[in-house]
Image (cartoon, rainbow, N blue to C red; front, side):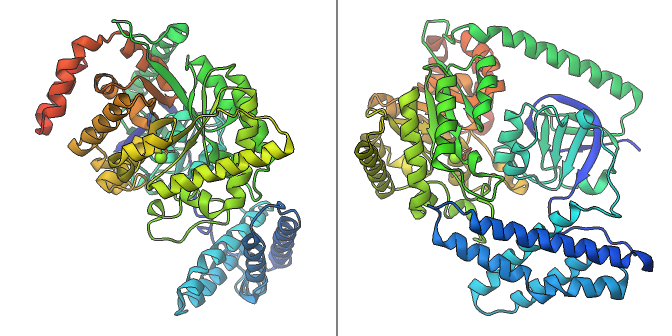
Length: 575
Ligand code: PEP
Ligand code: MG
């Protein structure tokens, strides 16, 4: 049966492929009954997984980085204790024998029993430890799946596989190489979630917020995904398939044509020079950035170096990564953001149980709370400044005391490098992200102490409009044209220009064509976006005359009526 689902388009392109359903929470496991003669084998499989998990924890503990916090030891110790709890280590074996069930199922049931015990605690701290129980059970399940035994394996089609999930974290997604999957679709998520951003940077079509796709689709269903319109067609007929194959080749042709602009300077018709930089998540992304004609890296989200691993990247590892980006960009500017961990990008094992993690210990707040981690990164960053045109960017500043503390950290790190005779660029520029309304509204205080500013519209919109960027239920409220957002953007850009403080915009809005002229009209001259978006934004810049767009921009900024505003924006984009 053919049917269509609609979601939120987050990464363009048309993909045609077969559904491969994956489970996000590994505690969702299948249940099957085993014949008596397989029970010993199943218990042995469980025991092997248990031993492997024990070995893994022991090795994590003995190889812990010397500079890591004492909590790390306590954390591993707690997980070891949970793993050895009879409900996880013995009860599943007994259940396999008594009920003839598979090990995964026995583990799931016993985990639920243990979680329920934690639920009973009055003490909030102890209650929260149920998250640790789930994490330990998931580890054990992963070891079990390494020995799949009787588990059925899904059919795979590699390059024509469309991954269907409830949710994919940014950490999940960054692991997928672009050629591995034709597209990603998820039931949850918003347009500016980090999952969406990573899908875009992988140049892979992606639609999120489909609500029930994982429930309605079957493994191996034939799918068409239109990443531009946010449409998913399930089991299309021949005519539909032929139409989308045509659209797919037209889309690819258009992309190829745009790429020819690679070496053209992004100047407006009246000769203003506009900088179009790329946002990257991994050092190797600079290849794409250069291929698409970016003239610098406007945002390196360094936190991705910290994801998908059980240990922390050492100073040396980080230094090598930052140096590689700086050298690879051959003198062009490279803005490296100190890690923006927390919220939807937690460190493994440090997943927060806070009710509102986006309002919690995230980005610079986490850096300041974990000084050893922060110092290691600052040392690596400063050392790398010796090898290229690196600037350092601080995320999520909300008050000046955070900035003062950060600047003190940087000064102290410079001092220790001086003592050791290690070279670095003494004039390295330090910038701040303006992505919290409080920082936008008190811009002068930040501008005074910083060398440059960068607007993070993804968070600025999230925090101004009070919409969780990862929540599909409020995704429709994401609105860069909301009067409050336009006011803040005009204020930030106008004030920075008046103060002659370099200002860039590195949120998703920078790569969205409808807003390019509006932002140029507000006075923005530096944009940073996903590499794939650079060519189309460049084309728009090349066909824009700043004097021509000025009157309409002013009109838009004075308009309250949303309908009229959209009409004027359409007009602005067609002159
Ligand atoms: C932003 O908030 O707009 C931004 C660029 O940073 P991130 O998307 O990584 O939060
Ligand atoms: Mg941000």
